[in-house]
Length: 192
Image (tube, rainbow, N blue to C red):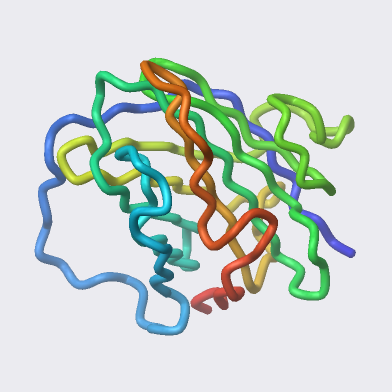
């Protein structure tokens, strides 16, 4: 089984200004490669409540998560798992971290481990995959943007996602899992 090699360590980029549209049409011409998934509303009480997850499997692999009411005065943790092999039920990539003012990391994995570094494959080398994480407070959106490289997701023809968030300060809340814990949204084909 071919597994993508993914590792990164960087600081979360917090974007407070609204995005400015260019008016240009999207480069993605295959509607099947950009899919919106919905999560139950109100299954957690706070603003990290996941409403929608959109995966755009194009030149970049981008995952956007819409929440109920993110606030920059609160601290959040997140975990995002990717699976590029539909015949496998375990993840191949794990991204974990916190925001605002915190770091995140991405690594290859063969387990659903949720510990900070536990579960990362030991042969990983740093900075083999570029991952940008943005938080749009004014829109209640978090965005994960993977750049495809020879070492990262280059040969992945499909991708499934599982994502979860919790607030840990000022209140410690329960995790909101989209779709559910250890459950994949259907795989999204890559736009070729």
